[in-house]
Image (cartoon, one colour):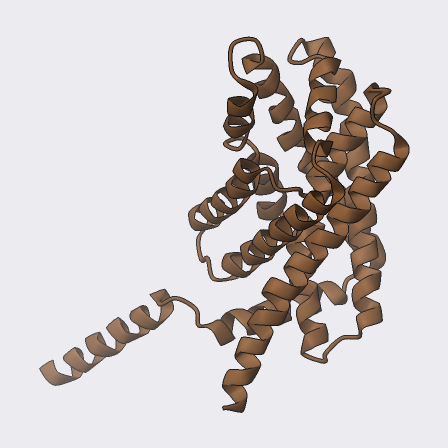
Length: 278
């Protein structure tokens, strides 16, 4: 009887240890492919609305950046202000990711995995990317217009602050923006990967905060937040032109996509494939 109870306790302990153990590389990959295939099965309307919602929600990062830049602008060195902003930069990402809205940079590597796994076609991938980008960009434009209108009326920032932020995003040449965008896309792909292995809300918040705070602190270019920042500048400043906005947006999107696909989806998938072959 005692031996039977001890065996049950040992089995329970082992089961709990298995449940609490970190996910393996293959388990994360399978979970990601499964999640991506669920997205491929959604209707276009659902994807558009979800991505539009993400474009709106991530705008709260921009609003907070405007507020903090305005608050510290008279007494703090400009370089210090941008570092301070990195602490509040993750807020919009937390709202989007925990709310399960579809953000292009988070979905880039995820949606590529079924194609690498030969479970989806590349044409379907590009179609999904297009839908998510369309929703993200137009959602971002709407929150941009709302921010420009509400900020000065609430007295939390001025139009000059919006222009200042946009000029800060655009002050590097396009080559630097491209490489910066690749790094940002790489980190966002890792964010998606790490979230799959996170089993609690607190751990997910920490992962989102750490990864996106790194993007903010390094000043890396994120195509969706950058869309809001530069489009806002375009709306209020004669110094920023439509060609500048379009050049930035296309370069940032391309860089983010390359970072997520090459450095996360491709490498993670190949690491699994080579291990299976051996």
